[in-house]
Structures are given as structure tokens and as C-alpha cells.
Length: 244
Image (cartoon, rainbow, N blue to C red; front, side):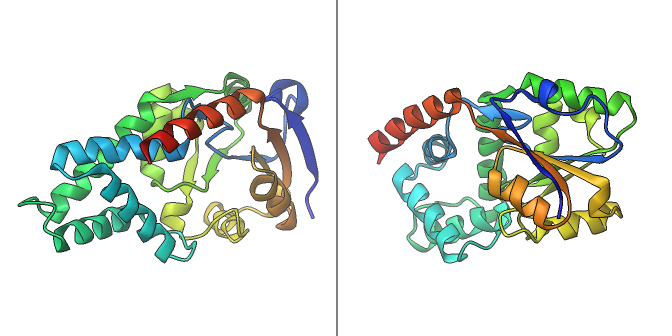
């Protein structure tokens, strides 16, 4: 099993070694960047904007989306499939008008990307560490349990001006596997053709990024969330409850 270490409050430059001979695998959300709203509230904003675009009651869109995800029984579902199923529900109840499924999927996707980008902020300490690793010619891969695709994650990094840091990007949305279950790690290792002992995983989720990485033979560092994340979560929770 790999070695696990704890780093609190994103204090990554002091906690991690200044140089490493290992391939760096890193999470995305709350590791490289963070949102100033929670995912739940982001989806509320998405439902409002999509609802306005297609003249559909936002609460219907949010309900259908949650039902589609729930029916997947916690399996990873490509985002286009989720949008497509939402369209099918709306079309069945004559809520969508003359819009085609392809138009709906494209617009719903773009709205979600735009909202994400409006609420992203870089985590400077992590990025500085990755820049040092990159300058030492260390390959860096983003490995994220994320509802959007790897190409969408690439857009996030390009928006922050850090896409050049990554040798490759892996999203559970594309792979159909997750760090949460642990089966994402063997998949990624096979794709990059590296042994577990050659890799170091960095992330904020203790189970997914640290324990499960270690169980697959990788060394790992856990970035414990700070109080700012708690405040964001509480504020967004209130906003979401007011919507519902």
C-alpha cells in the first residue's frame, strides 16, 4: 500500500517535498481550484438559466435532473446522457416546444460551463507546487471524479491559464469509473502506462484521493478543506433551500 500524508488548509508548498521523482496525479475541485458556490446551488442557477432559455419552469428541470442521476444508481453517467434524458422528460410533457434534442443538449451544456467558469478561483499554493513539478519535467495528470468531461476540465484550466501544466486529464464522466470506488486508479495507470509505486496522488477528499489511492499502491497527500469551504457551503445551502 502507498504512503498517506495530511496537509491542512492548502499549505501544500510547505507540506510536500520540493522535488519528487514520482508522476503527479492531482484532483481538480478544492485542490487546483474552488467554486465560490456549491454544486447544489450551481445546479439551481443552471436550472434557472435553462428554464429562461426554453421557457420551462426551473424546478421541473432540477427535479428531472435529480431523478435521472438517482435512476443511474450512483453509476457515472455522461453529461450528454443526463441532458438528453431531461429533454425526453420535457418533450413527453410538451414542455420543450420545437427545440431539437441536439439544440437542447448543446445549450444546456454551454450554460453549465459558463456558470462554472464564472465561479472558479485558483488555489495558488497547489498551482505553485505543480509549476515547480512541471519545471522539473515531472509529468502531471489531473484525475477527477467530475460530472463533466476531460475536455471541459481542460477549458477550466485554460480559463485560469494553467492548462500547459497537464500532460493529461482524466474525468470519471468519460471513464465510467471513479476514485470514490477506487476503480479509476487502475484505469488511469493503464492509460499512462505507469506502476502505482511511480505515482503520487494529491487531493482534498480523504477517502477518494488518499485512502483509495493508497489501497491501489499510490503514495498520496490529503489537502484538508479549510473554513472558507465551510462558509461557502453554508451560504449556498441557504440559497438552495430558498429556491426549493
